[in-house]
Image 1: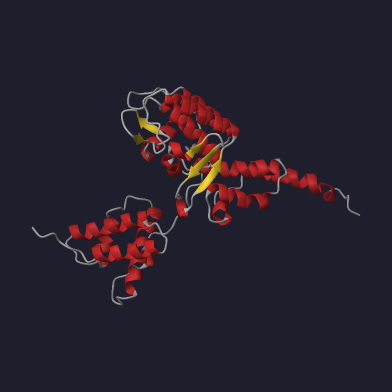
Image 2 (image 1 turned 135 degrees about the vertical axis):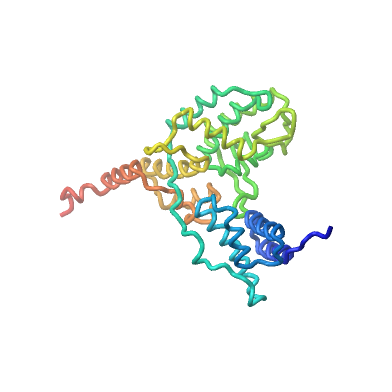
Length: 323
């Protein structure tokens, strides 16, 4: 039986080839466009039109407004690309997209909460399929909090990326196609040593390309994003880490907490915050401090530390010290 062909199949290939030639990754965009193409094939639609687009959008109506809007914007950008050579091609009306809603504020936590999570990790029970689970979860908490890694960066780490003598992690081809070296704190370096010592006693592969966070001793398999997130959320619950309104953090909130704690530490140490921001951007793998600023949430603790520093330097002006 001849397979039904949608004109989008070839056009999507051309579009992705062009975007990647410009240095863009476009993995999530490819998934969305392939999803649309498959949907149209199943509907026996030869090309994208308003009715087909509406039906595709309705297939994920259960998702949040921001997610739906993002998927629709990807398709609209593709259609705008087509319109350069096809003046009559369909382009979705952006005014009909769901309105963007504010993202949920991150839950910022500190050393006390992390200490509780480490204690909870030590109390976890290993399983036959995951004999290193307590050690893996403990190391994950340490690296996420002290190094500000993205979840994907942590999951992609191999043994060859860990330089224990110099206390450095090598992050390869992360977001924005950037690679970087991440120095570890003395405590984090000690945690990595402790983990590797436990790991070496089991049957896990110790080759350079073996995943750092191993899940199964009978194979060459690292933790998945879902598996790591489930374990971390278990620790959040066990350590009672939550916001003032009772919300549990996301795994990505480790990265927010890392950035905020760095800012708070600079204020308390009377450091030059402005000159340190580019260093933080480089450490976190950002293109510029504009991206880093997204993580620097203003909190009561930072307000208090900034006010105390201002008072220490210029308080005499308010007390009539200047004549």
